Image 1: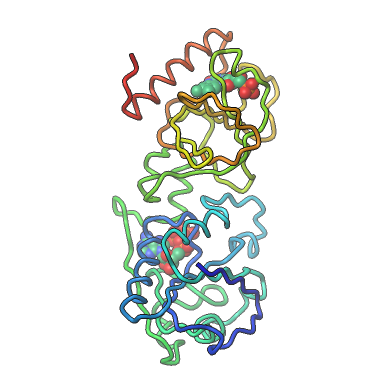
Image 2: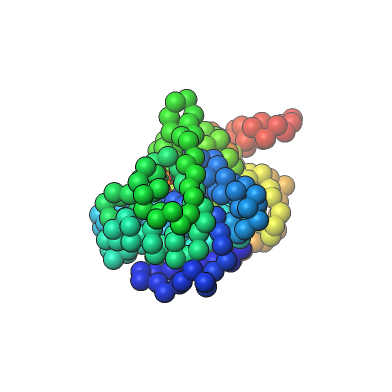
Length: 315
Ligand SMILES: Cc1cc2nc3c(=O)[nH]c(=O)nc-3n(C[C@H](O)[C@H](O)[C@H](O)COP(=O)(O)O)c2cc1C
Ligand SMILES: Nc1ncnc2c1ncn2[C@@H]1O[C@H](COP(=O)(O)OP(=O)(O)OP(=O)(O)O)[C@@H](O)[C@H]1O
């Protein structure tokens, strides 16, 4: 997949690029509604015998338009790029979302970011908007297209009558229902980070853990214990994870929760390794135990619950 970063104003002209079918949207999470839009663009491109492309924007419009600092992403940009690449599209445009870009009138957006990029067919969902204040919609697109390209609107994808959206999935992850989030994403929700040194207490209590440090921009499930998998060096292992502040040991809440994975049947030394943790099922809330023995016996139960979730025999 070829990656092209665009900033307003860009100077691409039609003749600089191959003809393409373009899927448009922000695509945080690359959920099953988004996949439908991108796969539709691919299908049309295949039929026309031309390139397939996706256009996304970065950072999130709320960061620029409402000065929101702490937007948590289901898929930060690099993860989103990786997932779009997995869908086998030929080209990805990442448009820098700035105040200047947001100020473009709908017609200017269509001229500069669709027609001038040699798009022959644009694909977006029923609620896609473009241009200043989102004034451009799928209803106005034929008018703004100047008959230079065709367009296809993907109908609303729903689950239990609710639109599948990045907003819904963020709410579901924040509620801890990672199993449902995974259904809406069409794959497990994952976070990628690095294994760092912890207090080295885990091994003394019989449950060594990999402490995974992730970038602040990730949307994390709420504190608690989860059945997870972890990819280490390309190999996937199952495990049980606590995300939280370890109140049994720590009086003060740290700035960020720690993510600690007890990986089943695993003894390797993996400090500094890049790993991805996928959340499958919430098991319980984090608790403050009266003593270490109570914590140890609860972790043993958590391990059984996770093994059962993964369908393993526990005796
Ligand atoms: C499955 C699991 C569940 C845990 N649950 C709790 C908990 O409810 N409360 C708590 O204070 N710590 C909990 N912990 C965190 C342990 O206290 C922690 O793994 C141990 O202190 C080791 O920390 P260290 O890696 O920083 O040395 C849990 C850890 C695991 C692996
Ligand atoms: N459930 C859905 N059904 C059909 N199309 C969708 C659906 N969700 C998103 N799309 C389309 O996918 C593209 C990307 O959408 P966008 O990034 O705004 O996602 P969203 O999930 O609707 O996010 P948000 O919750 O922020 O509104 C747009 O073209 C949008 O119309």
